[in-house]
Length: 74
Image (cartoon, rainbow, N blue to C red):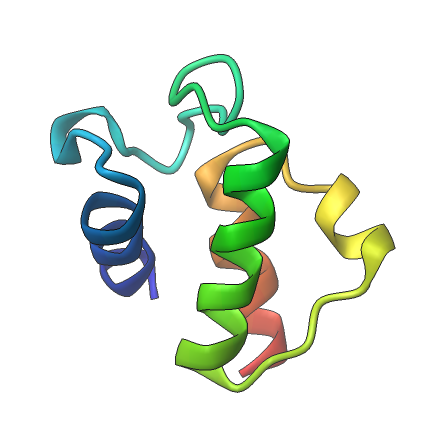
């Protein structure tokens, strides 16, 4: 799940693959803004067939948080 998410972050948001770790913070470490986070959510919904609620999105601090959510929903 992490590798798929990492590929999305690299390909769609043009992030450096070396910067993407489970502990990397989406905003502070990767510089993802709210619009990019919304894009990431849409891309994940398409890729994994999962729907995110507004409450879920606000819980995402690190890449690991997103991976954990995806694994729970799979």
